[in-house]
Length: 214
Image (cartoon, rainbow, N blue to C red; front, side, top):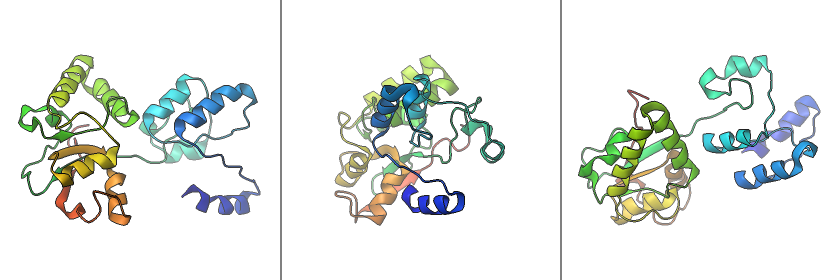
């Protein structure tokens, strides 16, 4: 995606772009190792948790930009300009249309005992779930977040395994009725050939949680 715009940027500004690609962890480790001698000007990565990690490691420098400040809302940028969010990702509740008539509408409902043995979610150590937990702590407090996590654990259809696509595949195969994944994994299964999901996406429904609250 980014590569499509680099030639246009270079043509408009005369600035040559040297792009180094890697996982977020790899790039952050490289920046940390290079320290003040790093030639990097921009770190482009995904998920609030990874951005927080880079900032905690003091790898980000403040930027003062009227354009960025004007165009990006305050809640999507660091108060001192250490980072700016250009897009948001949705952590969406997916469910089986065949087996679920009234899906959960909030993250809190995923801990309701009515979903015992019916929920698929990837490991709690994954940054997507860490970011979600961070938001629950911020909104509800640590005690409520701990109680929520215990409820989710009690409702699991299987021990956490695989990535977000595997949770969608769990709905298709009947392992679980409800799953929590990022929205674009579903979109990918619609657009591309994703084993265990493509061809069955019409059997999966989705809910954008907490729309009336947080």
